[in-house]
Amino acid sequence: MTFSTILNRVATTALLTATVAISPALSNIAKAQTLNGAGASFPAPLYERYAQEVKTKHPQLKVNYQAIGSGGGIRQTIAGTVDFGGSDAAMKDSEIAKVKRGIILVPTAGGAVSVVHNVPGVNKLRLSRKTLPAIFSGQIKRWNNAQIRADNPGVTLPNLPIRFVVRADSSGTTFIFTNHLSAISGYFKGRVGTNKKPDWRGLKNVLKGKGNTGVAALVGRTKGAIGYVEYSYAERNNLNSAELQNKRGQFVAPSLDTANAALASVQFPENNRVFVKDPSTGYPIVGLTWMMVYKNYPNSAKANAVKKWINWVLKDGQNFNGSLNYTRIPSSVVNRVLNTVNSTVK
Image (cartoon, rainbow, N blue to C red):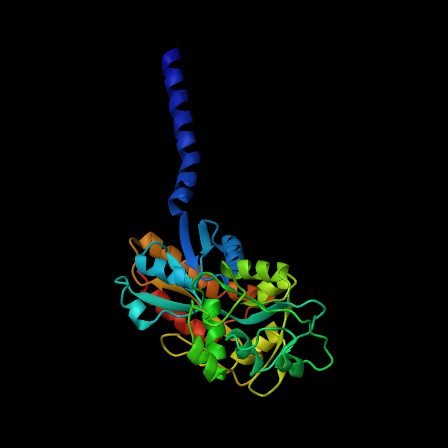
């Protein structure tokens, strides 16, 4: 055997070995999938946790989620620029009709909307069903107003103007908030109404924050401020949350337990679209949030990745909801939604 023959055999063997070693890596790269989602900031802390934890079961699946507000999530879903959207205001029939690829609404969690405040010297604040909509429709302008004092006997309220902090973007949190206030006050309904981005006519000293994060930051640094954020943002930013009067006349603080109590009687229709206006018990301002997935994707790999993601979210992912102060979706609803997703998404 010549020296050149030996060299050729060594080279061939090395090449085969390298090919065998590289093949699994190439195979893993081929299987890897990235999903891009955008929308509601209400569930953003939960979706960020989901994106981290899903890798335990599906290491090849990477999920990116951008909190741009529910309105932005619906617009990008209609435009087809995301793999899934997020919204706390379920898409309307007219919006779904614009999506040629079809839409499935996937409920993922529920939660409370906290009314947060920065009133000097006041940690515990109570707001009745009469007072809260009067504040946010501009009828009450100062913190020492007689109506607020009546809700808070024995509390020294400062003679300060109320600084209103609302969302700058089209927001599902705003939708949940205004949906409740419209249900309990005819004046608010006629003046402001249920909307993802109302014009807040009649309010002065209005500050606008982008996302729940922006509202929380503004309330935290603005003396005399009042605003609304998803409950977990109030907790993470150490903001004071008001106790609100519910339908039974009880003053209730936002919490996981009081949100669960409010959402316990919610019935999900076939299209999974639910609007909670004025629950019979528990904390009164609660809502649900949805992922919006297409029925048709450009290829089977993307469709299979979406199905893996949704199956994980509604099975394993629900175990993380409570730790971040979000409610779970009932198992009966989970099973029905998964049947639809697994049989329809292609």
